[in-house]
Length: 166
Image (cartoon, rainbow, N blue to C red; front, side):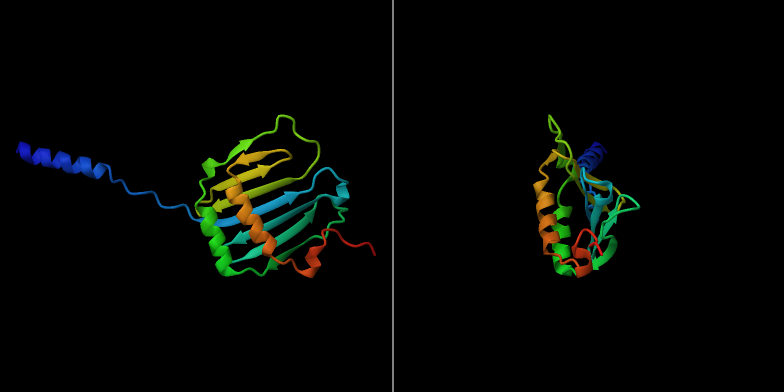
C-alpha cells in the first residue's frame, strides 16, 4: 500500500511541474495617434491610424469648432500579409517590459504621440510619449509600426493636414 502512495505522490509531483501554459493574448488592434502641441487653437489637430489584422484606417479631427484642420476619416489600402507580419512581430512584445522615463526638465510645447495595443481580452497596452518622455525598449514597437505607417499612402484629399484657404 505504501508503494501505491509513493507512486501516486511521485506522479502528482511530476504533473504539478507541467502546468499548461496560459494562452497567448491575441493582439487585435494597433492604434497610433498624434496630437499637435502649442499652436493656435484653430490649427490644433488629432490624427489617428487604426490597424486591425485586416484593415488600415486614418482619421483627422480638429480641437475646436473653428478648426482649419482637414478633417475626415479614410480607409487605407494595406497589404494583408504585411499587416499580419506587423501584428505577429508586435504581439510578441511584453507590455510590462516598456518602462516610462520622465524627463528631468520637460520641454515646453511639443506634441504627443500615443501607441495603443488592444488585445482580444479588451486589455490595452498604452505608451504615451508626451514631450521629452521615452520608454525603455519601446523601439521594438515604435520602429516597425512607423515603418508600416510610412509605407501607407493617404488619399489625395487626406494628404494636406489643413484646409486650403479659398
